Image 1: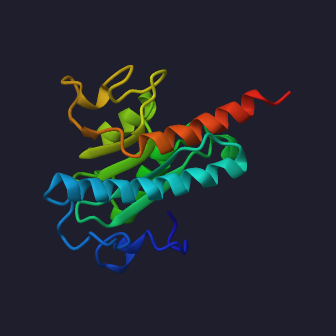
Image 2: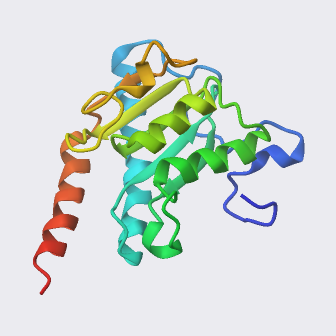
Length: 190
């Protein structure tokens, strides 16, 4: 993210804490109990789903992602933009990670959580490991190209230099329904 962007996510440039404060960014992130974590994961997945809807305008597959710092502050957002930009690496996860790194002013995203509506592919799983992301929260699993537990499990491969905690199935039905509707509408076109 550039310094002149006005969406507020790049708060790290002012010398204060990076990112945008969220209701749970009071130092208790993630919450201690499973039920509290579910509420937070659901809310963050809602933000990722909102990002995914923006991908539809450019004909991109509706995948959205958000990155939250170790203190629960929003550091980055992303949505698929491959069609919009012509960039094969413009996946929601990669764009959210890039924005988070700019917000923190470093490539290491240790302690961060990535929330994404669809299980990451091989490229995005590699980016998660390279960025040292601590936790991945997934909406829908991808049985055809998923690389974080479905087809491959790159983020927990013991040969990698870093392992990522994976929380799956958060708002899975909703995330999957958005993707199914997108692909069904594209199959119906002449």
